Image (cartoon, rainbow, N blue to C red; front, side, top):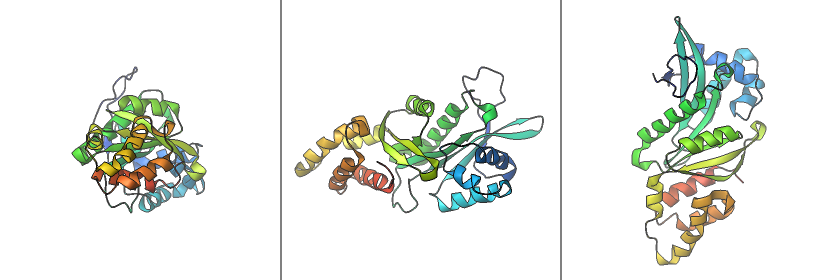
Amino acid sequence: MFTPNGVADPFQPLSVTSECHRILLEPLLWQLRDEKCAHLWQPLLAASPAADSYRVFLQALEEGRPSTVFTYYTSQDGREEAVGVGTVSARAARYLPEDGISVLGRTYVNPKYRRRSIYSQLLQHRLEQCANHLGERLLGVHIGTSSPRVESVFRSRFPGRVIRIGNENLGTAGVVRALLGITAQLDRQLALPVPKQLIESRRKLESFFSQGADAMSVREARRGLEALKDCQAAYRVLAQFLNSLTDLH
């Protein structure tokens, strides 16, 4: 249980569970089903009858990257109500051999609880989960969003710098800005020496890790990481991560 900070009106502390309780999630899935937004579950839910929402949700989890689903809820007068849901993944795709770049995705906040700083609290909790799970192996955290507000919250909450690595096409869910939060551990590894013949490749990548896609396209960054991936684990994990985002431009 945790209490949302900065909420102006009286509000019960939020509880969180990593178990997918149908009684909690189903009403939230019905709301998401009816709301047109850049959420990967929304088109799947909208294409199916409301009665199938929970089944569609479980199927999407099974077919997607391995994720932990956190459901945040409040309890009042013996009644529990879902406030929001969000996922944490240790890697961007199921087939990747290594973790190190965590992914925060599928966040949805109950419309009833919006404009009450809830998203910020859900984000903070999941960032803490990433740090607790991977520890020193955590090189970065990735999210995709079409919301300037969500991007602003992520940039302010992430304990490091954040770059835009490109725009990601989610198909029927739309196009989102792909962001990568870079940890101090990644910066330490990027500062390590590389073989003489790779110094120029690393120098070119410095602008990408500083300014992201504003300085270098993801295609160029992939080429640079391909040249460096065999000399250091951080470059190898980053290359795997960027290559897994096939619709990133």
